[in-house]
Length: 589
Image 1 (cartoon, rainbow, N blue to C red):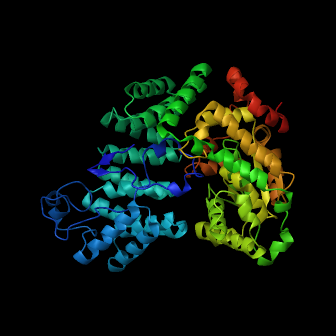
Image 2: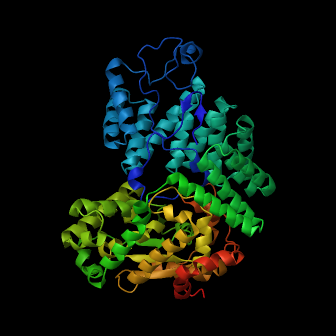
Image 3: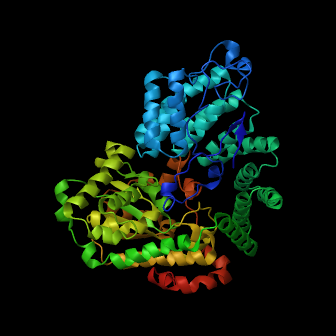
């Protein structure tokens, strides 16, 4: 969804394609407004803009009616010798060359150390270079300057843009502050209002977001993305009939195929809540078909996920998995991480939030560092498509180098505290790399989330997933079952062979007997039980959670998601040939 505020288009100019095969989760409707935009405002500003040209501050107004009226021109008006560097920075961002963008923005900041656009550009480049802690510090510094500039010049464009960036990087409080400033100076701007609504909905403050979304739709009544956001907020407020009617209008207009698909998907969630199960499943099917057609992945890309898992399953045998013992690798003195894994929609986010509520533990939110460790493995060996063969090429020194890389990246991303507190590295998709994890960290602990396979399939069919080889098969009912079977077969293969200790955690147990279940978890992790973890959902309120479960984990536990598959008996029967083995293996028969 591309919106325009005062003439500034907010469609993303670059995407993290290099993570596309692994980082596929789409975060509810907030991601429908593209947020990964470069922090470059007015890339080619004039040194002496004329009074009838557009103001360099990004307001969309003419200079004479904006900053020129007060004689105060913004920092981004550059001398000639800096304009070329600004142009180079902008071009580097557009082509995804973040190292070059960092170099350019550092040079620009050397000449103008207080320029908010340059601070933000540097911060964004650093974040994409995996130096998130350093990058966010620059973004937050830029946010303070932008807040002052926005209030002074009544020019909200940059504030909206930077607010969206801050939200993307998990800085929800700073994002909201900027969003409110933008609304204050532009109270009738649909984009400013929509951005604030997204900020609030993304941290589960739906009641506050609802009136804002209504104002946006009053200004842009035909915009499909805004209508979908309002419908989801109406549904959460119990106004399900109104939400369904609004989504039906989006579907009927069919202005944008992907938005139409999203409208079908959101309709399915509401229809399920209303116990209209046949209609709900039909809506899921329509959504999946539309998404699949829009993405148009060729067969080889659709098969990539299965081929990769098959190679891992065949390659990571008992000999490779036990090649180095924990004692062999302990000479580096590095700690052993705890990995929280499982199939998508199996309860990993719930467990992460419970663990994060414990004062002695630290949990990551969808870290990509295991994936980056896999990239390091490729760089070491030159083997791209066979992870087990690549690991087999390593010597002990190289394995220890991978361990150092992992912890260095963790420290950069989350600070030095990762070396002092037990770290839980959570990402469901890291299950694909469990063979690599088990070899590099033989003393690691594995928390593996398990849920009734039939409920997982229903839940996945109701979720929006971004297109990638890791998710394209999740757009069809049979594809979900096949992918579940492939992933869980890999787990059952590794489970008796690998060195790391493991604990399987059943979602149904966490709902049915929370304390007993999580006492086992904390005992496994080597920490004492504390009562405050029972209030985990209170800690999540108002905090950014990156996965599609962000709304659910902010609520007390509920049983409505248990045995949900029973509402879809005929549809579940179709996929039982794929699931039956796992229903039995995990005790759900």
